[in-house]
Amino acid sequence: MSSIPLTHAEQERAYIESLPGVHHVQAAGRAYPKDNIAKGESYYHWSHPRWGTKRSKTLPRLSELTNGGRAVVLEAREGIQAATGDPEKLGKAVVSAALAMTCQASWYEERANELRELVENLETAVDELGSDAEALLDEPGWDEQ
Image (cartoon, rainbow, N blue to C red):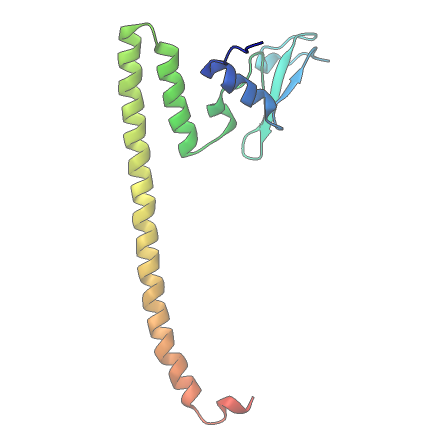
């Protein structure tokens, strides 16, 4: 008996459903008006230390389960996937994705420059401390402690 391979969307759904932080509730014990969930309705919930608990009637998208640069990349991908089949929407989604990637690359470049500057400052401090430490070691009585 041959099995039919899963589509990418089916694979992604199976992956999200397998994540330990994503929970499915068959019937809400109470209403969550802020999330548009009535008592008795099925919903998903997940949480994150930064933004707390989120609830949705639909399975969360991967971009909703992460933050930072990865979320930007995933949102761009999801926008392109959602626009597939409509050339005008697809064009706008691709332009939007390109802009998001450019902004993200700029952000990473800024962080890299900050880290390079920090490394240079640390190297300078180590060089200055190195000569001071050698002078301290040359003082009489240093090795007697």
